[in-house]
Length: 143
Image 1 (cartoon, rainbow, N blue to C red):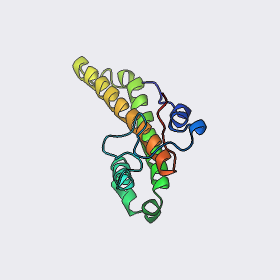
Image 2: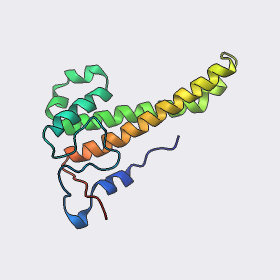
Image 3: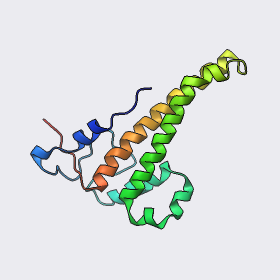
């Protein structure tokens, strides 16, 4: 499971040569449940999606409700930690549980780690572009 790019997504989300981009246009990797930036209620859908990525206890932090950009940061940290855990599990499960699991269970475990890693990598990309939009970045498609 290769790590998701960090700087490349930020670079793709901004195009200083063309200004701020335009509202209503979502960059690649934008999560389906979130309306495009600039669309009515897009921030509400972004905040709801970000809260779905983090533990429920995060809803009790007033500072995260007041500052969605900070919520995006917390979500990025949480998703990133989960992605690292999935990668570590994928790398080590065969060695650590080789004597404890039958081959079919081991293969199922590996597949589960791969699916979870892919899901978390997509979520990390989504958090990155949603966080950028919450900070005012707009994506302009290149021709």
